[in-house]
Image (cartoon, rainbow, N blue to C red; front, side, top):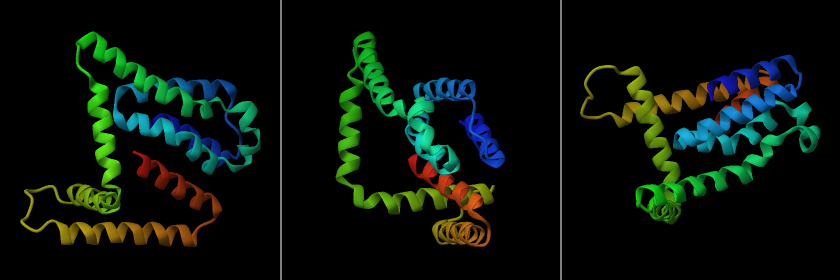
Length: 177
């Protein structure tokens, strides 16, 4: 994932579209990432949107040059196919548990933004605080999260369009993962 984003960022910095061979490498890397862990699947589904944001001059040529849009078809087929294969091979219906988890998450969608803020704040706190956890983590965690959002907002407001696109692409990727 990081390799794909590094190369896409370099292409955006040079304002040149990636080559066909580079796109093929990205496609293969995304397939491998998507079959390795859940965040890889989210990355695969977010990548076409992220590239549309990072490489705006390239958008008109997507229909002819960008096979990555096919990830919206390939990824669900691969995901459900591998789940089915796993159930057959290991006699465990993983798909039923996955569908139940998805149904549970969608049933509680109103709590997702607060949960995202909670987990992100905690993660930031752990990046800064390396010692044992104090009794009251979350006021400090929310302050760190607010500082991050304010800092990123200030950078986006002050810098040019290219930096704003990078920040928005990063936000989309973060929310997806």
